[in-house]
Length: 223
Image (cartoon, rainbow, N blue to C red; front, side):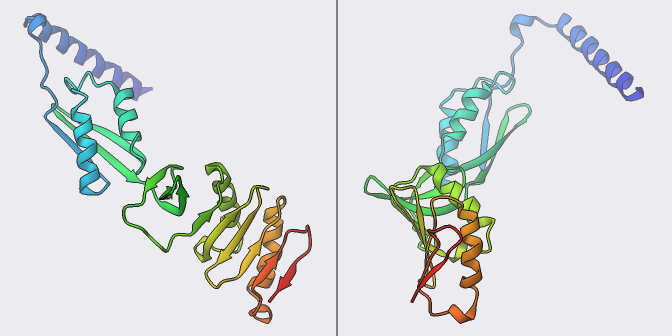
């Protein structure tokens, strides 16, 4: 209760000060400094510069009258951006701090190879990372994230996977880096992976090359 009263007193004091100041100047001549500095951090130098230039092209007048919607849309349009924070440093500096998205896999679209980011966007593969698993087929982005979530909740590490194969039937096969292929069912994938892991990490079956879990509650092994 005491804190609320203190805040109210500070607000009243500020308003009185502001009104008193305005009465002593010509409101028509009241001007604020234009934004002079735009600092973008979090991406590579080139990408930071590109975003900074686009922000400047918005012709922002002053720090008090920024159109937050337009500015946020511009920053978010960069496919490398996972999330971002905009800070105003009065009187004339704008800081934009960016968290870069993580590349999760590679995928081919229209004859070009892209990285698929954790933000769900396709990123031009300028610096190819061959350690990322490759997605074959044409899944929707949401279908990839669904299967990745199930894998992440299983005893199989996503880093063990070399390739993911998506079929028209909406079914997935996984190829591990040790060349073992896992054939997953259309439904009950989580339960299928539980059964698979019992064989996958058992030295008795170290020579197995295919683990077929397409039939519910059954595992078929092929060497």
